Length: 274
Image (cartoon, rainbow, N blue to C red; front, side):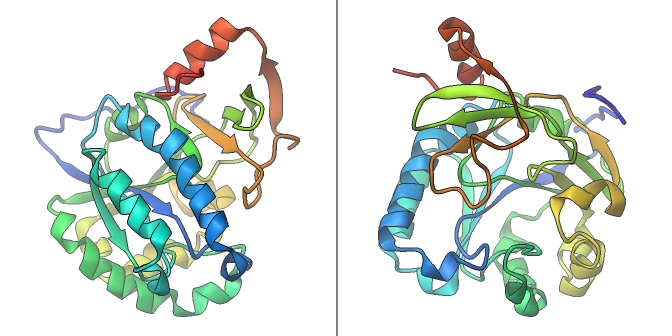
């Protein structure tokens, strides 16, 4: 395994890419239909307070934030709030309303219509796809990326069936402002898949390239030629309404108690504690 060593840096003047940060805001998991308006308002606040600042803080902003929602969310109040927030960020972005654009291992029934939804998503993404290589990086609406995360991802040379992944990161409890190491032994959900343009513009090719094999992020190294990126480049935010991540998880490692060190780490994610 490549333990955080930067590899295959290429000259972007020769070969350009389109980079999406993909965020499935709603529609993920079997309990998604049971969420209340209050739940979605709370998730918007988490995104606004933590995730969005980390994206605005990126040293390389040459990416498009792609947020997906359920079809009936188009006129929802929480989506209207998100649009106002993201419009004010200055980031390139696109909202789609075709459900999740990934294999849902927590709501398997959602995968029955994935191919048809992929066709709809392609039409929404076409105006943004201008280059020969497409990078898609997954990020949750309660995740944060370190300042040079996008920069490092885009420094990796493209290749068919290539992926990039992280192992260790950080975990931050928004309720208590505790910070600790997050020491995974399998790839996390913040992985990047690199696609040739002709794949991303054809729903069946996209299916064969990704969904046919990748049923969960843990298998990214099985389905692709995968390279590990630098450690501690992401942070999971726990807040009491997470789908799976929890402060008491077995992956939680050494806690950071010194306030100065904690502030320094979080500042790399665009966060400043009061």
